[in-house]
Image (cartoon, rainbow, N blue to C red; front, side, top):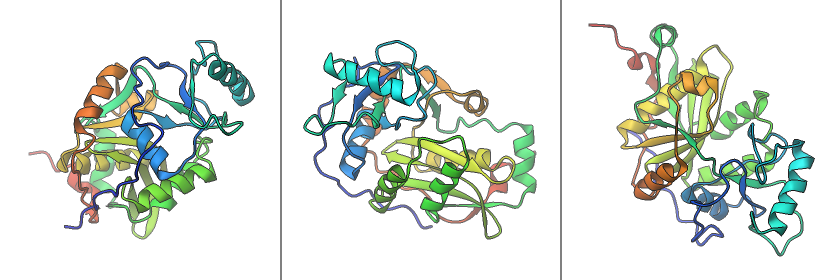
Length: 278
């Protein structure tokens, strides 16, 4: 069985020693910085993630007011940084307000083994004939999420940043194949026993659900503990997502972020996820 390699060290980061316990729960916790590997890995290890302006999370607030679009959020962030309510990761450089970093409270998660497979999805798994792989087409999966139309925050710069993380063994994708056609997938960042899922896409009905269910099975088998899906949506709740206090999420992350998790990369039939009854 082929498995993923251990991630390579990325060195010191601006997130070292950054506690998020008292940071805003419905607003960016920081702005600025870059999307280099050290900054990205440091953020995920601290419990934060980048969400560039232009497609802010619903209900986002800079100091608990409602957002006013990308430009309005930038103005609010400037005021919050000036008042020292939000940290600027690169204060020596002007601007940076297009790159806010978030750590929601509560946090949406799916405990491993917790993806909900309903009757129709089980039927799809049994009958579709699809297969899955891990890390065979990382950039293609991210591009698929970008093209999906619901992920305007996936900029070309962000794709480049995640591609570098992938090359270093931190970011992973799961691909869903119909023969040789890529029909769905999910990608994210592995931080030991926590997988921070960033986005998923489908080109065939249910393919993104299949991707999440298959990744859940592989991650659980490797010893993973929690899938971080960041914020709830009705779609994610239907698939098993629940909300926990950020403090609880950070406690789990601190406990398992150095775990040695190696994902099975082999091509597997999705039908194995829905064995015949009896």
